Length: 363
Image (cartoon, rainbow, N blue to C red; front, top):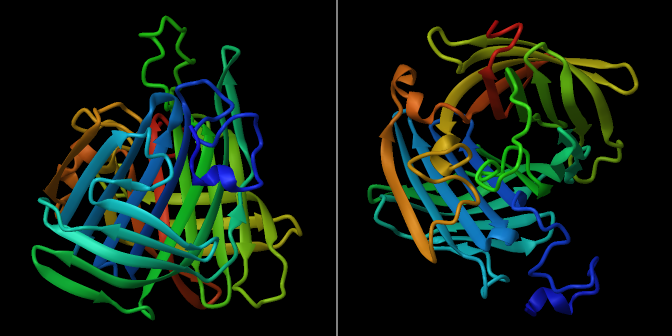
């Protein structure tokens, strides 16, 4: 089926743009963006994704205020025939200028929050190393991703009260990925396929730190023994700075968890670059948002890519004031963090989790 994208000279397969070259259910393209103020009082998250071989487009909009309330909306629709508009219910995503300006819109809805937020990049996008994995001979991951950091402008609203975004005090971060997504096949056993080998546990750490004259982005995944399954990262400089991107080759970490939870209480992360230099960053979380409520892990029958019908949406407002009560949505926490490195103070976001066992943090 033709769409406006088929007018472009960038086809890479003998088919129209509404199809992908892989026939697997786990093929997915996803964008995620967050924005927050430096104090952590406001923290918003929004994703948009398509699972072409399931004929699904879905989206979410989460807004946490004062570490007290988290407003959530999840929405899903039939992808075809409207493949060339990134809109699901009241949520929409608009590319104003490629790799530079993105507009996120959440229209008024029954769950009490809305926004119009523009992402303005301050650094070039960082292309991560591809992620590839097989289990029992079957491809379970083959994905490309880039990440970018910037500033936010616009407004957010909750329970009828509108808050203007101060561009000098708000940051924004985003990523865009596509390919066969890890842990995304929801129906393996129902299809009569042997499931992948069960992992005893793993650690995941993806973060973007923004300082005045440089930014750091890295992604780490370890198995339960602390063996590195995947690592990618870079130190990158703002637009106009002539210094080249510096690739990272390893990360050393010392995470501290809140008692009684697996939520982040603090961290010291040391990044090792390909030229042998090291940067030690002290990290202090100041705000939390729970991405499980967006569907990154199953929640109330929904998960990214799951067929929910032609048009579906759900949402609620959660009391997030006590981390000990967040077990129902605790699987994908993301944190606004304050970062300190060699006397500099920066801010950013960290997605961190320990799942199952880990030799250092959950033996």
